[in-house]
Amino acid sequence: MGYQINVVHRSDSGRELQENEDSVGYIFDDRNDSHLLIVADGLGGQSCGREASHLAVQSIRLSFFGTHDSGLPAPQRLAGAMIEANHQILNRAGRDKRCRGMGSTCAILLMLGDQAFVAHTGDSRIYMVRDGRITRLTRDHSRVQRMLSDGLITEEEAATHPEKNWLDKALGLREDLKPEVRPDPIDLKDGDTFILCTDGLTNLVRDEELFSIIERTPIRQACELLVDMANDRGGTDNITVAIARVGDEVTLAF
Image 1 (cartoon, rainbow, N blue to C red):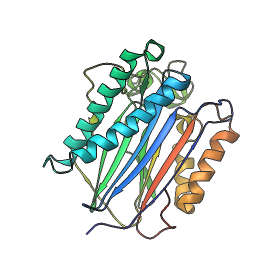
Image 2 (image 1 turned 135 degrees about the horizontal axis):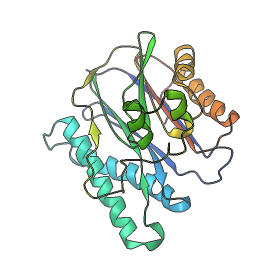
Image 3 (image 1 turned 90 degrees about the horizontal axis):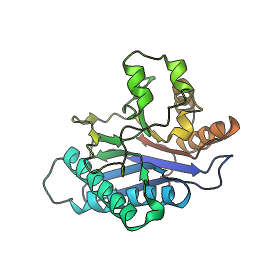
């Protein structure tokens, strides 16, 4: 028997942009007590970026639940759903010259019974808050992250680096996508909180600030506060935040 899961999300265009190229999706399947939460950040500009992120969410939802009875382990089903989304975006771009180069980041949290699984590509992130600490569960697939990991730049330099938006991996960039899927499940505990977000938030809100708000605030209010904080600091990009909390919380929101 799984835990009660409470989910909220908000997506905002940001102060400086009129178009919102982010997408978020949440699906609950009571057949096997599974919660699938997806955040995607479209690439390609204007309507093509928006279409790419929407296509990513839609394709992953259909593909993942289409393999419901396949017998495959959850990590393989997540990887397969992301690979299918990659094909869908590439096919769409191939049919419309206007959308050549379209793509999308993608971060997925699957809560299945009393376990959680994580998959991602690009620089949208997933965090977990547990026992008074915050842990980033994903590693950005970006040029700046590689330089940071190699010790070539500092965290402070990474935050303002001119190539910080250069992605090594995302849906729609190439045929041979290998999504990163956490191989081992996370055993859920009452009170665990997961945050999925696009770089419109993480470029302007530090991890410790994210932790502080999540720790002391009901998740619906936390979602609003985080988006407002990013907007107050310029809102230079689309901002999407999705929060899932294990155990009793506010009323479930879609």
